[in-house]
Each structure stands twice: as structure tokens, then as C-alpha cells.
Length: 391
Ligand SMILES: Cc1ncc(COP(=O)(O)O)c(C=O)c1O
Image (cartoon, rainbow, N blue to C red):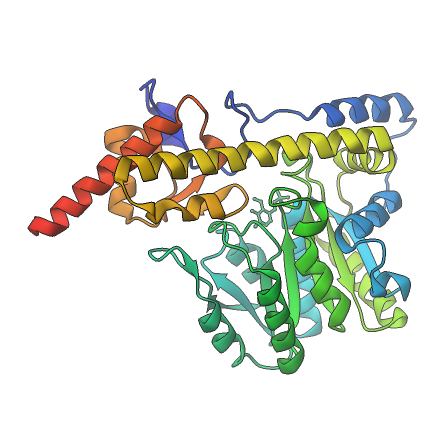
């Protein structure tokens, strides 16, 4: 980020950031958020404490948005949801809950995974292990290897799964694969911890939660960390939730009481402002429709840039090996090149991405897509020539 800021080239392109950008390069405040915020401010009569669980109406709206209206756990009153400071807060509180309940449990995370997962989960004292997930050079899931590794996990271990729009790979499980993972979780008695940070960025709210719904509806216990940073653009307001599904109602109450105790020991109470805005949007049909429209526009812009970049790379290189960019979902994909190639793209072309070659497709705009495609193609040709001549 510092190098990008210091680069004075007018050509520079930032594919390294982790936030959505519109076609002018801005991370906008959504219109539905502006309107809801005005209503919140006009109606607010106190700044008194809300409580460790946050807003009740926010929590129940989140449950419905994530789990759907007909979830067996909700019907049986086995679900408890607490508002958290962003998805990160939910991941950390969930990790502390696991640590308290099963201190020797290992948390299995995908290889690769989001860079903040190891500190967020591991700093609770839990041991983390990686399961194979994605082959960056071949641009494909390592699904058989994933199943094979998880089949050797100990009963009671936890499996962290990206619910949709995997960060950093953009490669998600299909529904058939979710069903196979579910069968394995049940057979090996593993606990799923699902990370839902991009609901609505893949297909739509329901389709992006289909894996979460399938798994949480079937296994006795599960956790879901939810974030509204991206899909409501509420990044700095810190809006998220931890959903815990338990075996029965009394266990659910016990889990809730532990979760609240953990929250009290870390941050006491979640911030209210963003959740008040989100709750208003979820409850008001007009605001919600406006949100769905704006969310759809963000999703479509990313899809368009994916399609455009893949097409231009195909045109510039004459081969379809970059078509995976169009097929993957969410903001991120791994270009699948070496860190040396990432350095060359930065130094020669002013194109910035993380060292693992993660690109944020929302950093691509109609005015720079051709430049990005041609630069990648040129750098790829140099790499190919060098490896052919052995230099
Ligand atoms: C995979 C993943 N999980 C969770 C989060 C949580 O984000 P936040 O704490 O900002 O809501 C993010 C944000 O980048 C993410 O990429």
C-alpha cells in the first residue's frame, strides 16, 4: 500500500486492496445506507448501552438472511445470534468459544486462506492446520486432496470453510461438493465454522448462503461468522454477527451465555451505529430493495470486469488459460504467478497485487482493463521466453 501511494505514475493500478471499488475507483457509501443513517439519527433518543448481544432486531434479521426462513434450527429454537464488531469479531469470539469448549481441538483452515484467519483464530490458543484447497498454478480446486486430509481429522476438530467468494482464490465449492463435505463432517464428527463475508457478491443472497444452510441444517452444532463490511459497505462501522446452531434449546442457551461472557471479556459490547443502520435496511422494504439493487450492481461490476479481463487476456495471449478469472466469484482471484512476476508487474507496469498474486477484480476499471491485460500478457511472455532460453 505504501509503495502504491508513493508511485507517481498515472498508469498505476491497485489490485492489492481488500475493499470494493466502483468504476471510478471509489468505495462508496451505499445510497440505502445514507438514507437509513439519516433515519437512525433522527430517531435516536439516547446513546446509552445496548448490551453484549447487540441489537435484537439486527440479530434476528441476520439469522433469517443467512439461514433462510425455513431453517430447522430456527424452528426448534436452537439458534443464537450475537452482534459482533465485524466478521473479525465473530471469528475471534467463535475461536474463544471453541477454545473454552474443546481446548485441544484443531481448527483446519484452507490452503490458502485469508491472511487474517491465522491470527484471528490462532491467537485464542487453538492449533491451526491447513487442508489442501486450491492449486494456484492449475487454477483449480484440490477437492479430492481436501476430502482426503479432512478424513484424517480427529473427531471434535473444527473445519473453517469460506461460505462463498473464497478469499483469496475466488474458487468456491459447488453444491455437490458441499454435500460431500457435509457427509464427511457428519461421518468424522467434525464441527463446521463457516465464514460468510461476501453474501451477495457471488450470485445472490440465497444462493451464496446455500452451503451454509445445507450444513447448519444438518449437523448438530455449527458456527457462522457473518460480515456486513463488504455487502453493505459498512467497513469502518464494524458490523457482523456470530450465529451458533446447537443440538437442542438448552445447549443453545448455554452457548449463548458463554458467547456473551467471552464478548464481555474482550470488547464488552459491539458498536451500535452500523448495526442500527443495517437493521433499518433489513426491516424496511424500500430500503431493502434499494440495498439489493446496489448489491447487484457491485456484483455485476465485478463479474463484468472478470469477463472483460479474461477476454482481453485470451486475445492478448492467444490461449484460454486465463478463462478461470471469469468463472471464479467474488472480489478475488489468484493470478497464479510467482512473487518475482508480481514484483515485475509492480516495477515495470505499476500494477500492484499481494505477493501471492491475489488480484482484487474490483480494482479493475473500464479504463485500465486493457492495460492490465496487456501488461500481464507481456510479463507472461517474458517469463516464458526466459524459461525457454534458460536465462
Ligand atoms: C474471508 C473474510 N472473512 C471475514 C472478513 C471480515 O471482515 P470484517 O471484520 O471487516 O467484517 C473478511 C474481510 O475482508 C474476509 O475477507
